[in-house]
Image (cartoon, rainbow, N blue to C red; front, side, top):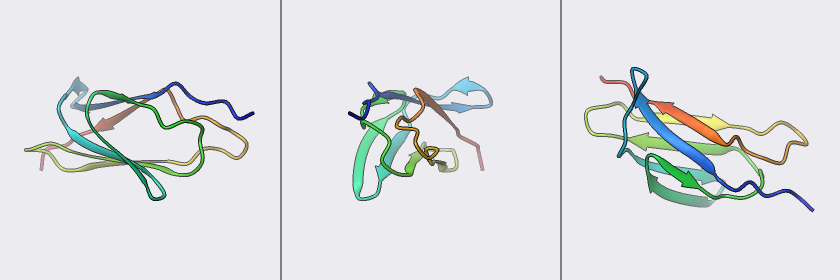
Length: 86
């Protein structure tokens, strides 16, 4: 049986400080989860490249790609996306 992760805490920050309220989307293939940061998203066992994109007014879009190592069945418990001003 493949272990299932309880969830991933996704946070956004600017200059090392929390920046809540960003509109985010997590995607694995054709699956999609929309949420606002910070949030815990439950997506289960690692089954492909996880792509997260967050947008916040006054900041550039931030994108994170996470590819699980071969044989590793979980995504990290916490991911932080850095939001930068234009």
